[in-house]
Image (cartoon, rainbow, N blue to C red; front, side, top):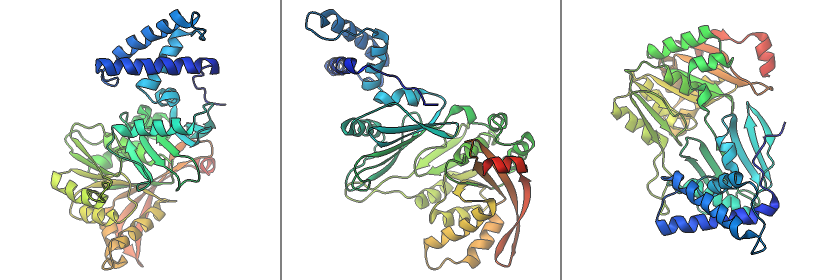
Length: 396
């Protein structure tokens, strides 16, 4: 099934573009901000559509038959993100990506479909510029990659030529409001109720949890749900390269890294953020994704009595612990496995491994407990939960 997208007849495109440009001119004249006063934009858009139709026949122009659809199209062009706005507004769409202006995909329920939208190179560049406008981030020849958070919390990732062959590559990952809590995930079949109760109790008891899995396995969604289950009196400090978690808690602070300036200065790394977070009296320190030397700073924090939570890419729960043992070695030559492995055994309590099946369904595949012992240089674990064999076959 192809994901539907709004369709404007080719004959109406010049009219819509002309109306949108007149709306922009009027907003500039009135010094109105379309993002702060969308109601005013709608009034102006409707007036300009009707004005166009009043003069269309006399000037030999194509009239606009569906005024409401044209107003919505103009609003998307002026205040939103053009043809992508309908997909961004769709609560079932999880991710949108552009391979080239004529090849655009979207994903629902873990499955991707090509969408009937065709853009131009200029339109894609314009979309990226508008998305980055309010983020304080940039993408250019000196910085050909960018990660940024859109106002609705979606994560934007862009790569430009000549890193890509010809066209901009754009990914927009949305974070749906339908799976923000453990009960939501239980209802969706991601984990059984008894396991949700175990994880909720672990968060309340201040146990440190590592969430592992492959890309798109649901790690961030599960981590956000775990954080939502924390007691209200817990102070949560999150550290991310780009804001993604959207933690709903009475006492929470979110920190994100920063790219270097044009002069190459001002960058803020995850390692720096972890150290700063420890000065903010956290009851739980959260690293959105551990992928580099910040793993060392996280382990040091966990071994000072601060409960933690994080996600990590891995193929299994045991593999997650092996990867966590290797990442701190990137911090410098004076760090070795003899220090790291016992630190993991002492600092990590549970590993929750997520998996996405061939049907697109995401579920918790296994949960293991770290016993605190190291045997022959390997962190000892004990299995708490493993998905039933039928579920495991469906996920493979």
